Image 1 (cartoon, helix red, strand yellow):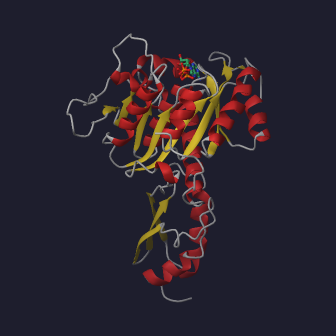
Image 2 (cartoon, protein in one colour):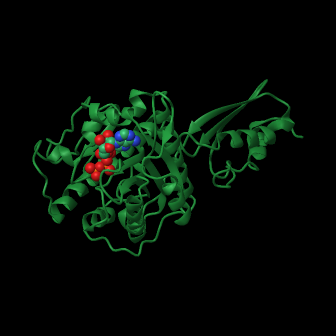
Image 3 (tube, protein in one colour):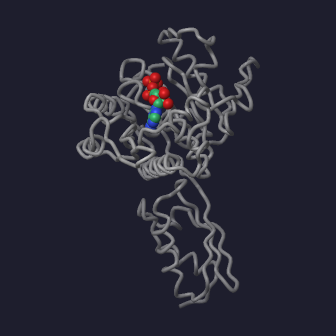
Length: 360
Ligand SMILES: Nc1ncnc2c1ncn2[C@@H]1O[C@H](COP(=O)(O)OP(=O)(O)OP(=O)(O)O)[C@@H](O)[C@H]1O
């Protein structure tokens, strides 16, 4: 075995593959600074926040460096890869990944999921923004609580400064309508506003922009999807058969938009009695899992019904933040990590040549 130098160590590490993508961590530029003294210190960047395969990667690194017979210290960093979206929609150069949260029907907890996933990714160390594109019922600002900085759209000719809620930049259709007024958007107005959200908003450098899409799979959703540069889609459903039927429509919608599907979240999956711990599958059991298997998509997470989740939405303090060590925060953190990993895996496939024409 050769002496331990940064070069020989880098060479040894070139045989280590990232377990999620099967690529050498040296070739993938995941290895940063290497320092050698009494011990070996290596900087290694993970491809996603909360990377679920970190233990496997660590074992591989330690095995590869074992012959140097020195203590090994690994300094973990985060370097989220950027997956270029469809060629015709490469509009957000400072945003690495755009993740759209959709649902086949209303009321399944799509906005709750979008808000908590954004908070969870941020807790896991990523830089995250939230775009509330739910033109029928923009609820993200309410769910995130009062802003520490309101949205500044006053300066004409300059970039719009997004609101800041709990440290996350947020833009919402809600900022552009009077409180309590029903929103009747005509297609061109929606397009214009969303185009502004994408082109005129100063989002800053983001690993992830999470988009809360309107519920359903009609024309409005399709045209939004054609406008937004989405890296991957996530579908939220409840376990009832009737909701699951709508999931198939949502899957079709993402396919039409040529947006890769990252997976399914089953919300209101079951209810656990807080006093006796009894688990009740109020709707039906295993529906999300069966459907995910049937459609060959990943089941990213299963969230039980719980007061703390709805209270988080009502009080403007998402459960991931309000009860940070609770069961529901843990489920959202795991779900967010699964989403981020699924998006990172797409990176290996490179930019997509779209057969769709831009409609605006
Ligand atoms: N796991 C859960 N446990 C308890 N309440 C929940 C859960 N998930 C969502 N809710 C509640 O269900 C209601 C609907 O949730 P939410 O607004 O997130 O749904 P949505 O799919 O975005 O609806 P919309 O179609 O109106 O946009 C809210 O009151 C929310 O607090």
